[in-house]
Image (cartoon, rainbow over all chains, first blue to last red; front, side):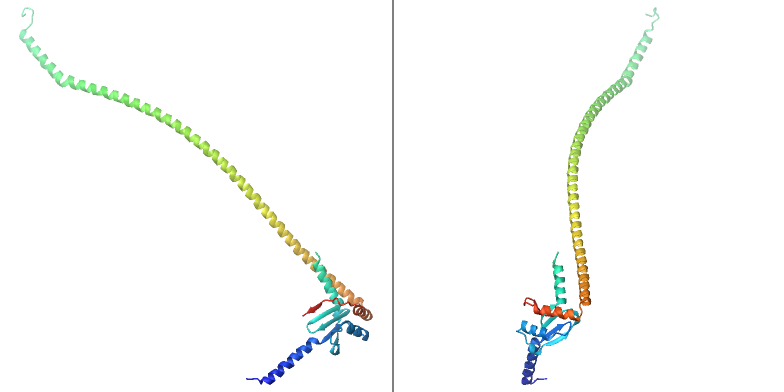
Length: 94
Length: 169
């Protein structure tokens, strides 16, 4: 079956846009709902991110702090992350 | 002669008889007998000679056997000395080899022990770290109430200096 080239291009463009959009979507995971003050601070600290479509989700395993996901990138500012870092440090110590 | 009682004819006949007897004896008895005696004497002499020869050859044989024995003894002594020396050398090499093998075994055992120790150490460390992490995580989850979590979150965000690593998934 032959696909219409225009339709193919449109579909490709749509998918690329979607991927780009997904890449720039910011998701913030925290143990409890963030206050407006926290959100404001986050916006100020990470000015380069697109906070317009940011999603704020609750994840109890974070314990405290936040985990910011931007597409495939992750910025871990949580206690869970700190514990994980501490674990790695302990493994590195002989 | 007749007055003397000697009969000439009888005497002549007796002389002829004696001559014939002498001839017969000399011809058929004395000669073979002498020959036989000579032969016997020769045989005896040969026997004596042979015995002498045998005696001499026996003496020579005994002498050569004695020499041979001495020679064999000397050779045996040399072989024994060489064997002893070779055995000593072999013993030395075997001892050296055994020592080297023992050292290898000791080294391997030490290495194995060290590896096992390290494995055990890593396992124990892993368990301690995991257990500690579980304890700390549980303690944090249980000890931090909602407001404390919020305070901690607020503190973390406020004090963030931009040095956190960014992970790529």
